[in-house]
Amino acid sequence: MAKKSSGTPSWKQNHPSTLLSNSVERTERAVKQAMSHPEEFAVEHAFNSIERTENALFNAEQRQEHLDIVEQNKAKLSELKQNLNEVDEMVNDS
Image (cartoon, rainbow, N blue to C red):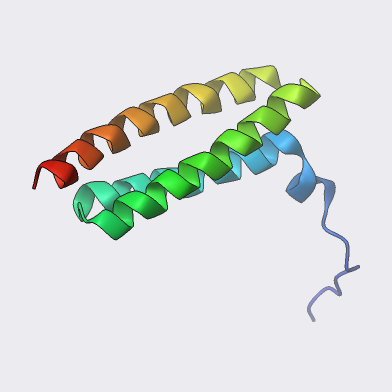
């Protein structure tokens, strides 16, 4: 039998470092999609995802919790931005 939801999200779902990690994962998928299918809409979607992840990063940094996780995700986001910029250049040169 399925457990009934209390209607409120768990603390894990609302915790800034968890939200950041989830956002980085979604951004990574979006950037990989843009890299494998370098088309304008995929690149735009990935840039939008990066913007949301940057907001999640800002929130996590403000809370100053789990700074090691935040720093790891910050480094990953920087890498993803670099990859996406390379794809964006390729798309714009076509």
